[in-house]
Image (cartoon, rainbow, N blue to C red; front, side):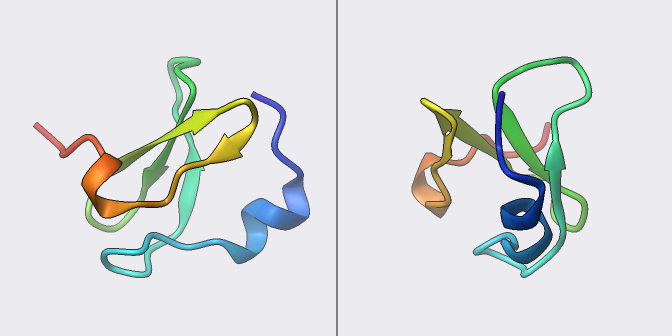
Length: 57
């Protein structure tokens, strides 16, 4: 995943406005540190739609 660090510093979770960080296991996702939603990254573009998010277990 190749996302600009400046972009990562300004985008937030659309559900709770928590901080997003890359998934620790190398999966192409950004994980919210607040609610735990995982948003997919497709072609290095974050898909920040709540309907597309994988919910925490």
